[in-house]
Length: 414
Image (cartoon, rainbow, N blue to C red; front, side):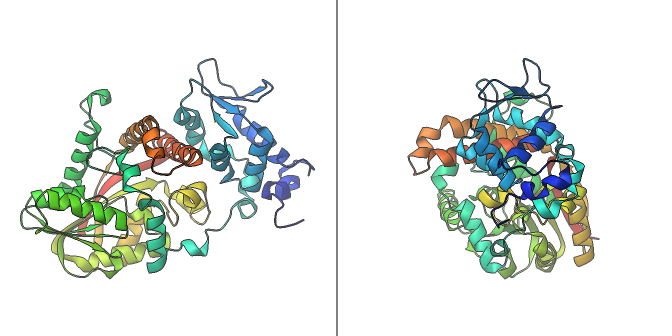
C-alpha cells in the first residue's frame, strides 16, 4: 500500500466490494450503482448503457472508461471534472452538458452509498493550507481567477462586465429579457437595499470591473471600492474615467481588512464566497466597524443549505482546485449566526433568486462556447475550454435544481 493507492480502493472491503487488482473497478461499481436509477443514459464505447433514462433523456458518453474510473477512484471529488477536462467523458451529441448534470445535482445527497458517507475521512482531501485566506493567501487566490485576462471575461459577459447573477423580471418571459438589462436591475436592486442615494458614502468590497461603483456615482454617491485583482482595477479605472466620475470613485488595490473610514452604505456582490469560513467573523466585524451610525449593508451571496455546508466545508473539491482556490459557499444560517454573534448587525431582508443564476450561467456558457475562437487567441487551450465548459455547466445545474441559491441580503443595526 502506497500514497498512490486510490482512496476508494482502500475503502472497497468496508463498502462491500472485494479489493480488486484492476484500478478503477471500485469507482466503476459505485458509479453504476448511482447512475442505474437516474433519468440519464451512460453509454460505454461497446454500446453498453447504464441508467433509467428514456429516449429523450440526457446521454453521457464514456470515451475512455479505464482512465475515467481511475481518476474517480484516485480523487472521488475531483476526478469527474478532471476526467471531463481530459476528454474521458462528454455529453453526447444533442445533449446539453448542464442538462446531463442536473439529475445528479438534484440527487446530490443520495448519490453516494451510505457506507461511503461514513468514510469521508478516506474519500475527502483536506483543503491545502496554501489556500487559506490570509492577507497574502487571499491575494494569490483572487489573482488565480480574476487576473486570468480581462479579454477572457469580456468575451462572454454582458457590456456591464458583471460576473455575478443577473436579476430578471419575474413578470416577463425570460426569452424576451436582455442579460445586460437584468444585470443593471441586479445592481440597482442591491444599491436600493443599502439605501444608496445622493450624498451617500459608499464602500464596495470587491470591485469587479466597476459597474456598481459607476451606478452608485450616478446616484450622487461617493464611492470607495476595494479589490485584490490588478486586472480588474485597471479596467474599472478606465471605465470610471470614461464615465467622467473619477472625482467620486476611488478604487484601491487592497484587502477589505486593510480598509479604514466610515461609510453610510457597504455593498458586496458575491465576494463573501472568497472570504473562507475561518474569516467570516473577521469580514462581518470589519463591516460593522466601517459602517456609520444609521447605515445599511447589502451583500449578494451564493448560498447552500446549512447541513451541506457542515458536511463539505473542510473538503477539497474540483471547483476549489481549478476555479476558485480558497472559496467556500456559506449558508444563510451561517451568515445570520456569524453576524449575530460577532457584530451589532442583524439580517433584515433576504431576496433569493437562484433560478436567475441558472439562466445567467446558461447564457454565459452559450456565449463562451460561441466565442471560443476569439478566446483561444489569448493563449487558452482546449483543456481550458473544457474546464470552463464544465465549470459553467456544473454551476448552472446546481442553481437549476436548487442545490445552490443566491440572494441579496440586507443587514443593519437594530
